[in-house]
Length: 214
Image (tube, rainbow, N blue to C red; front, side):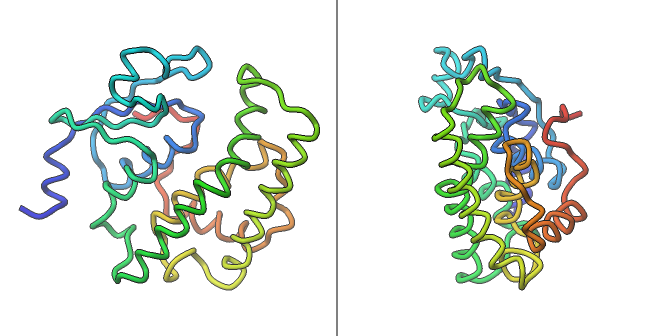
């Protein structure tokens, strides 16, 4: 039995997610690409549903997404789930160095990109999460643009982030970059990123970030 067959045997699974979340969107894109069946359970973060005892029993950190496999195995952290799902797929390049580059970009996404781009977007879409001062908003915009600058340096000279092919590194960063404007980020100055977004859209499943999975 190969690894893809072993993974398929663990589905259908249940995905606990919040529909507007880019972190959850990464996993939904991978599940759609791999054609793995799953049941979707909305966890309303605005109402605090990720802090219930029932949810915390699945993920003590109290964050989505959480993927529960058919055998009861619980997977947490969006990029870790993405890696597990796609490790032997066409979204993972071959070679030790190429995989290191993938992990490097995915770490960049969580430490530099998501804490700025995603936070401003979340506050704009869900003011219930709390308001930001003008100084906080200015700081997030500045640091978010610095992260986008780093992406632009690579994407101005190559079509994708790693080895000129779409990989989970692109999926991880596409999730919040393609909706960065919702948080006030101006992507017009990033021609490389805009061209990359168009290429990603051609290679990704036709699933919007706010679309309820079938």
